[in-house]
Image (cartoon, rainbow, N blue to C red; front, side, top):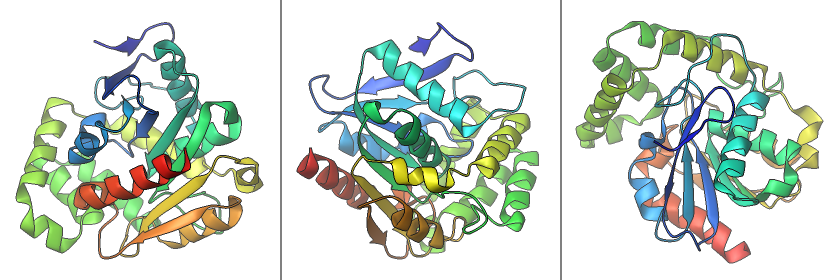
Length: 268
């Protein structure tokens, strides 16, 4: 198993695609594991050397009992890059993964070539990450059995039309939740870390060319978060997806792959 074992927690990762292609680190969101990238990773691996990571507590990575921060999760990611010998890479993070990517771009600018932030937030009062109601719904969902939990989460992150047309996606998520259950304590700790994420004016220190992808129908992380990020990160561009839910990477893998690859390859 490919783990970073020189530090704790152990972080699980996978490498896909051509090793001589531009490296692209992909970071998923709250309680998600790398397998949740699904078809999008399949579409990108022919163009990039993908480094896919299970955040601490998710998938095969070790869980941590004490509170931690987004900065700690960024350090996990940098440790993976050190372990596989990648000095500099593109980064694509969505939701909590986008917060981790922001922190890496701020604290480790020499490691970041280009930055893609999806359906994420800068944190802080001007643009709250998610509402208190949504946080409670996420926690309540995790108390349920895997099938009920995934069904409840799918309602929050996928559009009604997509869920009705693609019941197999929710079925795949149920299997992932059954095979690799995420502890409720991990979800609480990841939520705590995300809630405390607030880089503020440090976002102005990001020098990597940045693309922000957002759905105008995202009901979990309000689109104003993306607008605020674009104002704070110099030169950032926004690409809007219309009608998709929060997890646009699952709903629109072909469109997302085209946007990401176009931005990274055209500007590399």
